[in-house]
Image (cartoon, rainbow, N blue to C red; front, side, top):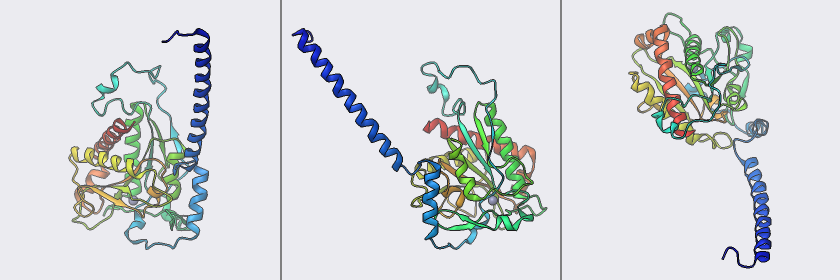
Length: 323
Ligand SMILES: [Zn+2]
């Protein structure tokens, strides 16, 4: 049947190719249309839509949310080490040897947002300015919590983030931080959410520690709730990310919060950092700085290194699952 009537067969093939090319062209146009309607479209289009939503939205009750988001300076990048293995191609089957972890960070782009900033308290005129937090406004940033001895949350967040960055870079990831020091101001929470997507990150981890009642203790991982016009594109994978980070912290021996959420997980729709994110994002409260045990762990370099290692494991598990 293949060779019946040579000329007819040739012209048939030619018509088939023309039809195939036409279909391909139609598919390309269709894909382009889908992309422009996607919630995770270009950052500028997203910003424009957010601005519209903000103009007609009432200010929310800040409630306990005010202290949760951090602020800082322009995003900075730490490239993956120059000693990356040559050639991206992996041998067949290697992915199956990852065991849900090892190798998943190689080539990943990870945004870390160390909450707040050490200079925020000295610049209320900057940190109190309202910004779009997801269809409503909140302060650009806040000072954050502190231990009873005055060790600032901003410093805890920054030191854990640096330790985490080192671990990730050592495994071939490219890491972007939302701030590069702990004596500056900001950035605002909206930028802390946006910068990850703008820099092409696969994931955003916002690092915080809480200031709750002295007996309360433990960590919780906050994932974004559904906020129309903002988080539609990220809620699903952010929930996977939240579970992965929660599992890793718990496996590392940390206690899920006794005062918030269930089993270390919380969903919130009032956090400007998460609402402005365009890639899978969670905000982790590593512990309660007003609790002696949590504060001791989070201000001790060895404790910070352990927490960072658990966060690394959570990110690796998430990336192994979704990439
Ligand atoms: Zn915080």
